[in-house]
Image (tube, rainbow, N blue to C red; front, top):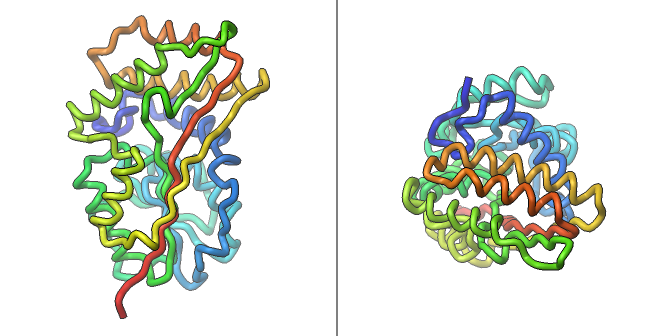
Length: 281
């Protein structure tokens, strides 16, 4: 059974997609949580914490570890296939999983103490992202915090790979450019992950500039083990994406594989936003 079709990785069988997401989550975990001060989140144990776009619960396990033990987690996702997998995969009394559209959250005002949104906005249209963030502002209590991670899809900036000849390979950059063009054409998505667009979406959702913190995080992989592990993440990510991009030249994946096999250094950037919920009393 496949995950939802308008999801860019949606032609992957659920078991294969879940494995990809688990490997990705394991590699990204130390970089996502580096220098993140949970004391700033102002968590209220009387209210649950929301993970929007939880998917197969690949990162829910990290939230269970990072959040205080008395905080319960509601994982929501629009895809019933992934939610079904999450319920089977992660059985913990602190967690519950629900099929729900992030644009129309079926929860009352001020229900949550905070929210985690990771690798979600880049899969949405501009207007849908605004609608989704407005819902988060509505359902999170005053003083709560939203943490957002987004892929920073900028060719020649987001992904740097050096091969044994110290040249910057072109196939990975070409793939990212094709992905951006596909988003604009098929999803009417003008690279929501770019920093200026993230700020614009947050401001139009009701957040104030002074309540938004943006950090462009860089991950570096230098040892043979680190490079090999991250190359697996990149290859699986590109492969799953390529299935949806039907017009893509199939040879590019072979070229990317060769570049990754001969690489001696990787650097990958992603954007992290921490935004405070402030409401007029």
